[in-house]
Amino acid sequence: MDGEDDSNLVIKKRFVSEAELDERRKRRQEEWEKVRKPEDPKECPEEAYDPRSLYERLQEQKDRKQQEYEEQFKFKNMVRGLD
Image 1 (cartoon, rainbow, N blue to C red):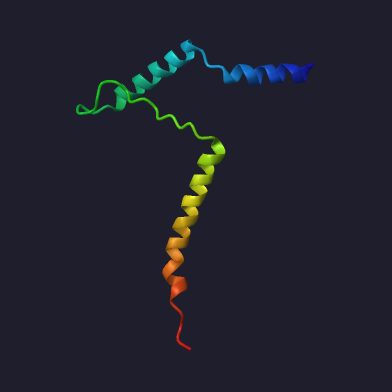
Image 2: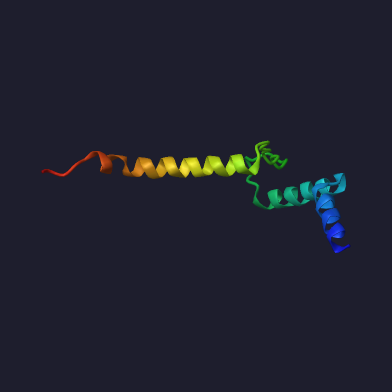
């Protein structure tokens, strides 16, 4: 019986009501007002939405770090010592 309640909680947590969205926007706007500079727009910029899955985003980060690592040691591997 407890397992059913847990699954319902998971489903409910995925749903975000319009009131929650408005509350988040208000908090973000208040934080923006605190750090806003005179040349910045009055409205808080919207958060960028990334439609990719979490796996795809993490895979991209992993690939980028791997490329940076390989780039860092690329020249070291190319140069051989004198025989």
